[in-house]
Amino acid sequence: MADYTFYTNPMSRGQIARWALHEAGAEYDQVLVDWQAKPAAFLAVNPMGKVPTLVHHAEGEDRTVTEAAAICLYLAEMHPEANLLPSDAEMADYYRWTFFAAGPVEQAIVSRALKFEPSPEQEGMAGWGNFDRTIGTLDGHLSGTAWVCGNRFTMADVYVGSAVDWGLNFGILPPLPSFAAYAERCQARPAYKAAKAIDNALIAEMKK
Ligand SMILES: N[C@@H](CCC(=O)N[C@@H](CS)C(=O)NCC(=O)O)C(=O)O
Image (cartoon, rainbow, N blue to C red; front, side):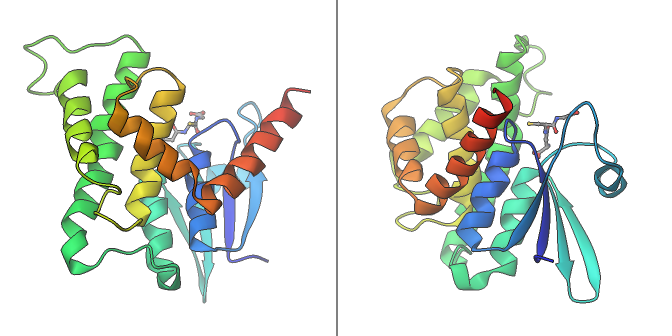
C-alpha cells in the first residue's frame, strides 16, 4: 500500500491536491469518486463527501486530511526533503496568502460564479468584502513578487497558484499581467505538468 490514499475526481479541486502530492514526491493510491455513487470508505473518512480527501497511512495510524489548503500544507510538513516549507522569514507570507486564497479569494470567485455580490451593507460581514477588494489585494501582492514568499517556490504557491490558474481558466479572474505571469510560472513546474497530465487524461477518458 502506498503512503497515501487520495480520493479525488479529475474535474474538481482534487487537481490542487494532486499537484501538491507531486511537488512533495509522495507515493499515493488514487480512488476516483463518482458523485452519484460515493464509496462507503470515502464517506466514512469524510462525511462531507467532498474531494480532495487524503488518508495518510502513517506509522501506527491512519490520518485523514480534508480541505485542499490543509492537504497542501500537511504534505509540505510530511515531506520536508521537498523543500516546500517556509523559512522563518517566509512564514508570514506563507500562511497569510494561503489562508487569503482559501478564504477571501475562494469566496470571491465562487460568489461571482454563483452570481452573488454582497451589498455595501453586507460587505462588513462578508470575509472577502467584495470581489474587487479581494482581487485587487491579491494583484497587489503578486505584482511585486515572483512567488508568494518571494523568490522561492513554496507549497503556498500550489494553493494560491491553483486559485489563480482556475480563476483565469474559468474567466472569473481578470487577466491582469500579475496573474497571467504567475500562472505561467506555476504551469512551468514539472510537478504541475505531471499532475495535470494525469487529470486531463482522466477527463478525456470520462468524456469518451
Ligand atoms: N473546502 C473544500 C471544498 C471541496 C469541494 O467543494 N469539492 C467539490 C469538488 S471541487 C466536491 O467534492 N463536490 C462534490 C459534492 O459536494 O458532492 C476544499 O477546499 O477542498
